[in-house]
Image 1 (tube, one colour):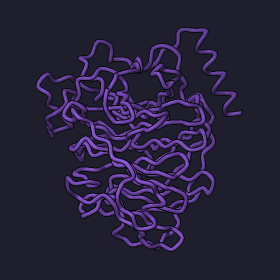
Image 2 (cartoon, one colour):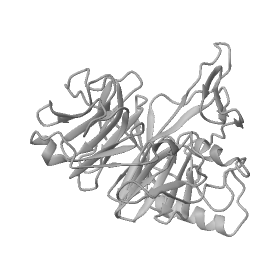
Image 3 (cartoon, helix red, strand yellow):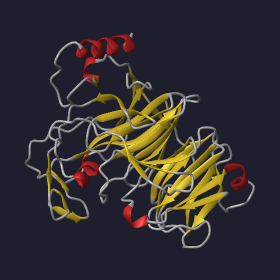
Length: 370
């Protein structure tokens, strides 16, 4: 019924001039009667320092992978059956299998491989899970981008169909939605169109990647890419050649104000950071922080958390405490909303066992069942 109502909404939009934040046809979550599930926190009994300095978290069967700063090794693997940390890989350094600033982890759809991108070295280290668990901490393959200083900041790296897909953000002159590399992580090509969001027509090229900063995933079951946006309540789905197939807006209708600063100074309230030409208003919020793909469905983590301090006497409407995981099909139709009672920064989910693992801004690790 939910799918039918949302598809009907989309079909009606095709036949009329839809007024809203996006030009053209899109799915508005507020038009969909999406069922809500409340996830329940489960004490995990793991080491309380396991997520200290965490920047990403992934699930691969019974193995929990956490990317961490403030550690001699970036990636820690914990066996959830025993509760023990069974391996640590990617030592801090510049040698084989080492890294300088790993933040995010990718996992193959079959769980056989995982990888991490080092922006400073322009290197992706790929590991075979079985090798790591048997004591071999060296990557099975490493690829390096020769012109790494032109990449921009890359969060999620997708390895699919013999190519490497990224959605660079912030410091980049590339005006395409994606940058695609060959299997050696070289010969980059830009592709893909930006969503036609109100107020973004005619922006300078480098501004687009900041406005549309987001989390990238591959949907192998549908052979598609998807991006959930950090500053926009928007999930966009693309074909593998970069054609924009659908946009889904919501669950809350934030239209965040931004400005273009030619001196590449980004302002968040009273704080100025240099390196990007887009600045955001004082009430800017983080919206979609993480996107995951499992079994042909998308799981997008929505927080709506305010990023800057607000005067105590300001009348500010705050969202409900906790996070919302919006579940969409591969066409962008919302199917379900999963709620947690805490604001998670990054997460992963196992739809088969109905487990959620994530961490908050204070590096506390949480386990939920839904």
